[in-house]
Length: 230
Length: 242
Image 1 (cartoon, chains in turn green, yellow):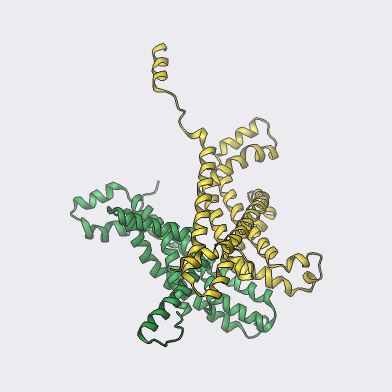
Image 2: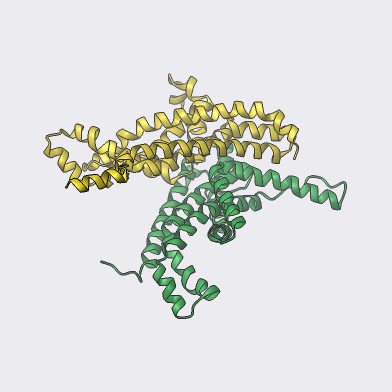
């Protein structure tokens, strides 16, 4: 580990933060995704409109800009709120990890909503009818039949969204979160060896992508174990 | 919302927009020029030809664009050979470095799309072309590549939008494109909502125009798949004759 000049542990910690942030954004993002999909499939026109606006805006705006909006916008809002309570309060900064997780979850949710909407629509009509014939209607049918079936169709595309999400965590370094990218930048400013440290960061991201693709391949195979095969 | 500030910042934001569109146009043009030969190499059976391209695509698709930009902008300067080379006056410029990274980045994604599309071309069409006496180069030029462009267009549309958003990362190496300009104005005025929302609206407008334009191309390229508009009366007449 001579080549890392003692930065190995810091980089490993940075990578752990990257994974943790990605997982948190995934969990929250799936909530936005399901809500977005249900809004787009809803019978209410206002909800459908809102769902469409959400996915269109998220998918058409740079990820970096969304992170900046949440971070600086959140800071301004929090400061205004604090000054309402304590008139001479200073700046209240949003922690970069909170802003980052929230922004990334919104981004993931925007893409996931489209994926999940398509997956709900891909469920064969007959299966839903069969469930209804058994009396599994409404909420019960949703929880036990439609929701689990949706996963099978959504998983491949959601997997791609997840791999993008892991790479997008690097953008939070711009607002100061000490994840893999930021730690690497700190290492380069001390060691003056940017090529080595950015290459190491790149290789760690590559390893994460590799683990994720392998894991997803396994999950996809598992999600299809009930399917008929020709 | 301070609308006066929004309007006052518009000229600066639009100047940034011009840089963004410039970056995108050059990136897509050079990226495509690089992607076509890469995709052709990628589908070759000889491992010596396909594996280097495979590794190239894997690297650029598996790592964040931000790392790639930093690797080129800060990383290359670490080597004396680069600093003493002929290209240094260009490579030291953030704009050139960002552009270079974008080109390599989009070339990897585009080559991967073209690869998938070429593999999706039905084998019978290639066999037919060979049976007509086409040489390998002709098969690529006249059959495989035109078919791949059509098949890969929907995926390429996503890549174009992705790259538009990717150009915002040039701001991290001080290039004053749309996000860079917005960030600077916010740092001075500290009114993030007005400026960032204005910037987001500009991006959305560009996305809208690009999506529309690409949909038009897709429509045009699939005209052979659409049913021919034959007036119903005429069909009836022909049947009467038969």
